Image (cartoon, rainbow, N blue to C red; front, side):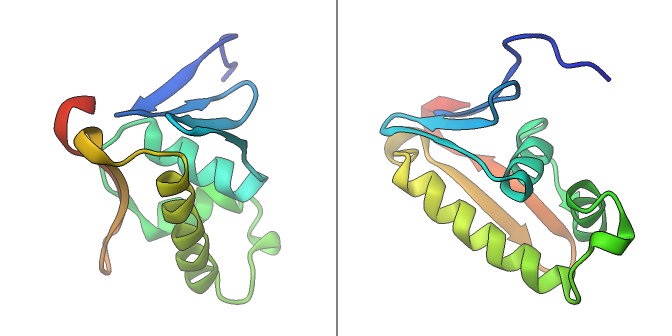
Length: 116
């Protein structure tokens, strides 16, 4: 699938530029590493929809030979890093955006307040 120039996914005040792999919020922007980009692209494509742990692992490590020894632990660590990144970008307050995890189910982007 080709990506149209300028395609941007949004979740509240958070936006992901697909072309530049840049995550932006009210306080700035950051260019994502490949793993963070794959995770955020999958989650921000459809905010509020749960992405199973298995689907997330497949999205990040497209070649099973590239998977780390414990992909679940690596995924949980990266999710923590991305939660802190979202906060640092200023996506709090009235249009709070959070990366959430339903235990034993998967991950999703939650948007609360005026930013949906």
